[in-house]
Image 1: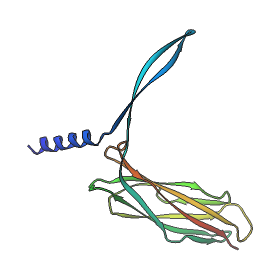
Image 2 (image 1 turned 135 degrees about the horizontal axis):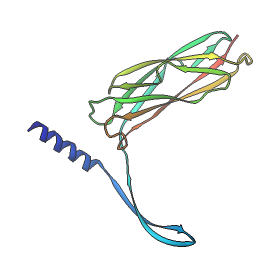
Image 3 (image 1 turned 60 degrees about the horizontal axis):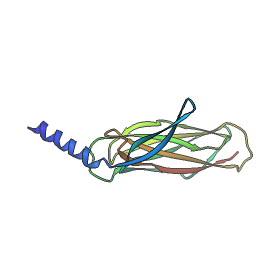
Image 4 (image 1 turned 90 degrees about the vertical axis):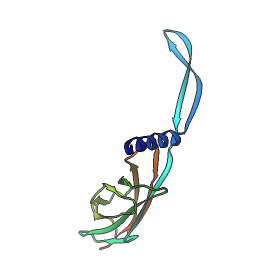
Length: 168
């Protein structure tokens, strides 16, 4: 009996949460110098905002010596908008990094439970010698993907950045 109820709830949730927009349009198709009209119906599924990724850095500006490697800690969490018991997959992406700086993420992909905080180390090292005092912005995007209906239940990304300053 419990299996039937769980299956019914799952099916009802899936049917109620799928929002479709049907769009009909006419498409010109060329076949051997003749043109045929064909009607094509497209179904677009609109994703439902289901939660958001959150992140903060231990330091927003960091000074790096020519031969040093510095570490910044990034705290990442996932907050669902609704009740959720299953984990999400998180990914840290580098969006922008100056050409003179090498950035390594200790764990770029991992699973994360709602409310859990994952600490990831970000390693920064100078790879090209530049003038002392040179500043560069490093920008990260933290993406989340739901393991349950990932194309339907959307997780909002977040962005964090830091300033790297070359010293000595």
